[in-house]
Length: 113
Length: 113
Image (tube, rainbow over all chains, first blue to last red; front, side):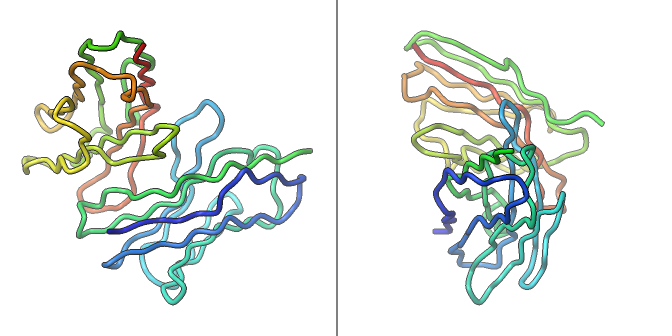
């Protein structure tokens, strides 16, 4: 079945450092891909999405490109802030599967001032 | 506008008791999902409702779990004869019929003692 693998954390960075969180997927169809973020004490929020190959999702300085050839959707940000400290989840959704979200295990990010 | 709401926010129950968790989706959202977030298992799909169609119950972990959605809006997840392994955060999400993006409620933290 469909699955998502993302890099294990925790990831600890200094403010203004470059961030990459790797995410790869396995799917039989043509899924949409998502990054969700969970800030401390808060619920899951959609960060960005891409619905087809070569699409780039972006929001709040974060970007991810849907790469069909490498089945990847890596999350990047050029300069992280302390306020970016959170848990990041990669997920896929397939129309053939009721669009339910299949999740990675999450990557915890801590940004130090 | 109003987001997805869930109640209660926290629930502590004794092993063997039944619990009911409530979800109010975003108005106009025809699709509704329940997920479970636990330390050992990450995020797991439980059940999906879409309009008047038969629900997709493929993620329910046992027959102690059931859910209903009344009038195409509010949903209730019921866990009978709770066990300690049911302790988790139960998340509800909704989306429109034509999109992939799901919007999450704040969750109900269930603790079974």
